[in-house]
Image (cartoon, rainbow, N blue to C red; front, side, top):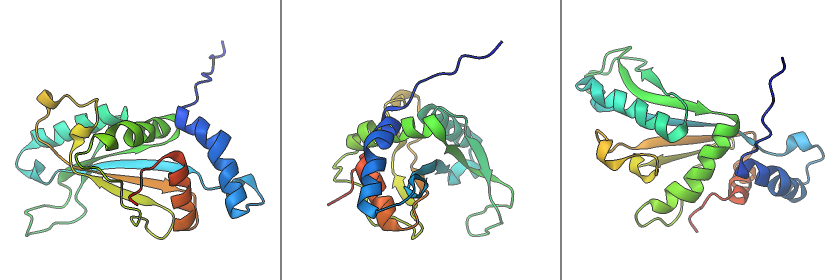
Length: 187
């Protein structure tokens, strides 16, 4: 028996397909639709340095990222020993999740339209945080800006890193893509 395939398309993806992609094609003069920059993946990570003393904090970070993204996070291990930070090689010190497809679009929609406007004194995200290859990275100081997080149940207020990976070849193309889908860049 064949499974019924869902026809649900996230709101932001619909905006990209119907409006943003044709605008980008016209703006940059692409000859093929495959040249148009698109989002490849979004990586959400949380470094928990205090996890070396308190394992509960790492479990709380994994749970928080899971609640925010809707996908189970993996614990990340240190690549090498660092004596100053009292970290051994292979010690669990963070959590990470890679979002693709519908979850990626949903997360970005919530990030740009719900979470970022809740940041105190928010004036926009840094427009210069591109890496030279069309990828954008940003840091958030508190995970409580997401409405899914219950303030009373959190172990500790922690920050997180969000990396948005695009297929754009230049930072200019990537910035145009993110601007058109609604990323609130600082003026």
